[in-house]
Length: 638
Ligand code: ACM
Ligand code: ZN
Image (cartoon, rainbow, N blue to C red; front, side):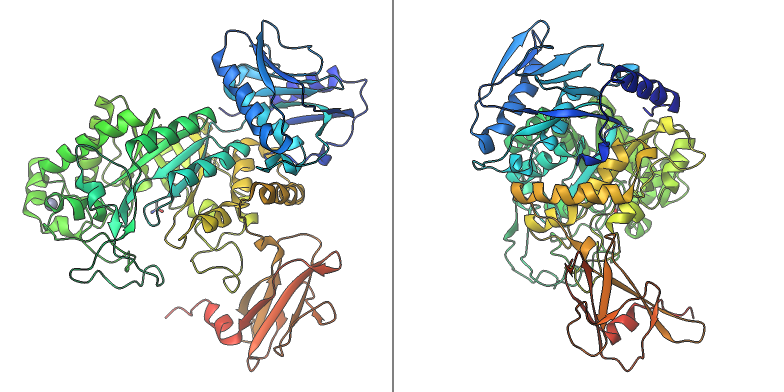
């Protein structure tokens, strides 16, 4: 799906040539994310008005639906009720927004999601070969409008858009975002809002992590206990991973699930936004919620409880028994209903982090290994995944799984989602299997995005600037096998919807740009300028987001003489950092961080630091005890 440099040059020449007479304004005035492939500013602007119409290519219901989406998107903040009408040739109408489906959209190679957007003093024209392209043109148009366009209540704003021509298409076909709804359950209405924001950023794949040890979230009519039992756990308020195990007789009151009607609604909602919903049904590990419902599918027989957030990497029996035929009957029943509910080409079967210890002592598992000539438990896992693939294929679906599905041999047609770095993806691509890159080091949105001293408790570390460096195609890999990339929001440390938004934005903007825009157009400073503009839009949309880029992070180290040094950094450009070591609050009259690590005596009790920009504090004051800083030092190897 990647464009060659030659195509880009040809397109650039065509667009520049067509408008040689126009006064070219620097495209850096636009605040669109992801950065479009080609932007050519022209003088003037077009004023949108109440009585305008949206004119779409006649006889194309999919174009009409995009028109209705646009009319609906502007209705609340403007109060306008734009009508959608059809005509054989929508272009050239004055005072209209033309959505034209045409093979002649000027996008090289007729890219399936490409579009051309032209705004003149007379109107707006979006041309695309597909309705998806029209939709992305509409998204760009919405981003050209003032931030108030995101409001759900009536606003007074200058509804102007600049005259320009944009030619645009994505670098990758798979632009994904995963939401874990097992560790914490998020209602369907929130999932729709999440999908709305994905659409704004031209992300097109919503990976729904529907089941795990901590809750089964999808109604399966043939297996009612999955949601009667598996969707509920004992309530806990403590830190995830350290919760008390379930006590005898304790009621399971915390949780929830989606009915099949709700699933269909979300899938249809996503489809209207050109977003594919990829369901994930975990196996063989991470399956405690299923086993709590049907313990006979385990090696040990249970009984089990849905896990309320205890030590989740413990060696517990949370895997299906691949020696038991009932496991495959279960998988068949689940996939039968999943395949009907989700139109996606793929179903994700998980496959990660399966503790196989109980298989070693299970008679059924050992018998299966002997009968199938499987050399070890990895091959037993591969046996299960291959059978899962055959079941899925019998229902018209393809299998995708986390990179552990490579262990013991990859199923014949499987796609691999590489999360433990890129190596699994590289190995799969070298075997000519499709790959989605989703490495922890670049796209794990559950990780801290700023200094842990300022952020709600989680683990790992993934600042915005690191997401912006995500490159899904490693050196030496045939890019045709890299479908694209995806960020994952695991929700162990995400107990509510506001925090899910906080962990997602702005990092998913960086993701969107790395997956849509040409690699050559990446520019961190310009991305931050546009991200700051997007913050205003999120404010109007009442979507939460992290302002961690404005804060200071402190990294301790020891210099060659063993002295403690502190490196202070802020991701936002043009900021100065001020700090204190005497417990007082820092401001711009205090010590200025010189830009290189400073030595701080260890008798200091607390270090405080804040970034200043444009004469004011840009973010929060980081206050951190020296003993906590020392605890951050890498432990000496023993
Ligand atoms: C994963 O993060 N365990 C796929
Ligand atoms: Zn077993």
